[in-house]
Each structure stands twice: as structure tokens, then as C-alpha cells.
Image (tube, rainbow, N blue to C red; front, side):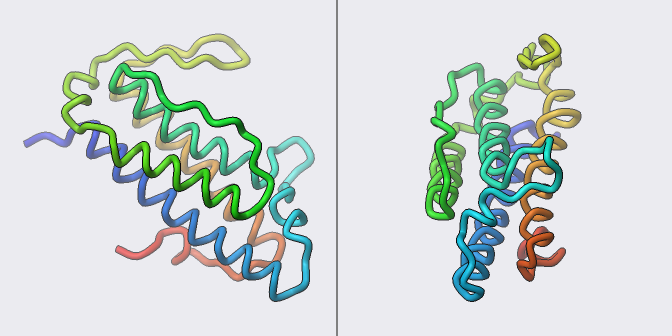
Length: 168
């Protein structure tokens, strides 16, 4: 039986977001243990022109939920992008995971060839379902998850590769 786009995307999104949630927990614990204002971490960036930690979490969430919506031809949930605290970021991930858990795998039937249009600053990007998942959605999700990881690591949070990969 061939691998479906549901199997290629949703469980991967869920795992990555779950691992990200655990990494954020370590960030919050680090701030508390070191007497840091949590905003030093949630507002942290790797470079001035990059999104802060909050933005990385928001983009990872958006990538997962909009990929599911685009692949199933349904509207995805809209979140306000107003998270500032670790609790807010955990809640954002939880809402995203709840949405992904409710997506019907059968709704992905035929999505391999579904036309996908992604708006961007440079204009629209056009894909079919398979190339969208493999060449855009998955790499984009991992970019934002690893950038969030890197921000926390750069700020001194003791996270490692095993935290990024999670348990098997």
C-alpha cells in the first residue's frame, strides 16, 4: 500500500510540534531556575532580521494547520498571533495539535495531485499536493522548529539533538 500524504504529513507535524512543546517547557524551566525574565527567551532571535521565538512557534503552527487545510481543501483555523508567554506558546501548540487530531485521514484522498496555491510576499507559489508536502510544508515546518530550538540553545537552555528528535 502506498504511503498517503496524510501519513507523510500529519503524524510528522504532530511529532515535531510535540517535541517543540517539550523544548519550550525546558525554556520556561530554564528562565525560572536562572531568574530570567521569560521575555528574554520568548523575544529572543538569532539575527535581527529573523522572527523571535514567538514568531517561530506561530509559523510552525501555521505551517502544520494550513498544510492540513490546503491538502484537504478545507478552511484552516485562524489564530491571532498574539502569544507572548511560554503559557501562550504551549496553548498555541495545543490548539494546533487538537486541530490536526481532528483532521479526517480520508479527506486526504486524491490530495497528491490537488492544486495548492501558497500566497507569499513574492507572489503566489503553485504546487501539487505531493510536491507541496515534500518540498515546502515539511521543510518549512522543520526550519521554524529548529530555529526555535536554536534560539533557546543560543540563550543557554540545555537542549540537545535528542530533544529535537524526541522519543521514538
